Image (cartoon, rainbow, N blue to C red; front, side, top):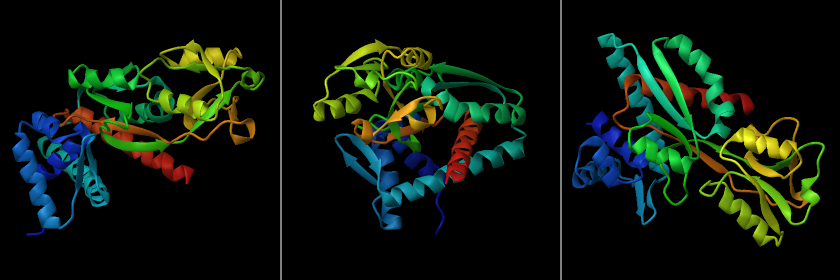
Length: 288
């Protein structure tokens, strides 16, 4: 038989989204052993390894990435079919958790279209740093989350790999100050460590001149000329300057922006997740 069963596909997706076999089993109501058996059977049938296990967690192989992409689409179509047959129009509340530097680039473009398509869904948004949002999702305080992936414990599906840049206000030159003044998100922000390590590696003295948990605070400090900052390029205001190698600033690693959707998500939550994926794909197609 050449068919995949959706239970196995859901198990595979949940392992990747939850970061491991045990967490996936808890989300799906299965034992870790049962989850392992499902994956082993899929790998035996396909003849390729789908997941790599390590101390850092579970990551998909190249074949696994391909299958997971199809699996998400198959599961989404299954939900749509069941909703269409049962007349299950999406309704209720969707509580989205997202760092506020991702709101304009990923959330704002879709909420109007989503609300028109699903007028019975109430949207709520919680903004905070990713390391605080993940526990909220685990405790059931929010329904889905957009996060910056933790390289040591990658959760969810990667929506976008976002380039980052050093940036400053157009009419100020804080990059000429020594030590270099920085406006940063607080400790725990996943963008901080490699940026600070890059400055240390090049021997550039720095100091944290300003800290804020939210984007408006970072904007205020940079616009006042207090400091430079680091943002994803989609979040940099058009009137700011980007600082690169010519100004003596090192290139930074890409930022992995991921979507985490629980296995037991509501119909409305799944619809929002699908809208978000489609919006990101459309943005990438227009940028190509």
